[in-house]
Length: 311
Image (tube, rainbow, N blue to C red):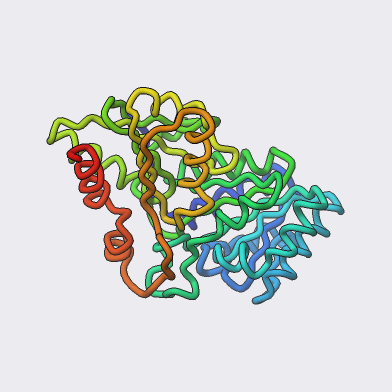
């Protein structure tokens, strides 16, 4: 029987930071006035000067992280995804990636999970921005077990890592002992390949259940690593189904949908449908409403697959 972990993603983030610090006193946590939002406020008591709230100065925060790494520390740098990717882009590019610094960037409230913070705080472009920077590893996480594993992996692996997450609860998917080195094939079928990440993995699993009622069997793949992309798992599925649907809580350009499109066009051209945000900004609303509005919910996936297969 699976042992699932039912915990808010932000609390898991704080827990793993605490665990890493207890293992290595050279681990630092950097915040830009979002300590309460990401449940890290309590870390100040245990991490002391290794916990730094720089205030609302994201670009400076990235520069501080670069300096700490030069002095021997490894930093976890958190803010809203758009403030890490857009506001601090030059510092991420030059001070971290170009300088070959080891740093873990964490962008929270990803995509529609920003809900009532609205369009200014609803990042649909962060993974795409990071994907243009050489060498950056990009993860869009789908449950707390996966978040923990990838935080530890990023800590142990030199280079720049960008972890994209929501702050609140995600329905757990993985056993607490699961490992993540390749994309995860969560369900097998032969009619269509559903390739998702982040909050859209559960939507893809729900859609697969709905489609099965109509005799349509789906591969469901959690492609949590946007860069590097596990091309082989996706290509193996595509060669079986000849229909791939990507689903992401992000602009369809330059993140998961684009990465899969590039892999298919270069290795196995086949039918591809990209579900995600298309030429639109964010807006205020509940996550359920916004998933439906941007057509990344289970019903939209089910409808799209049926339309394509019935043509």
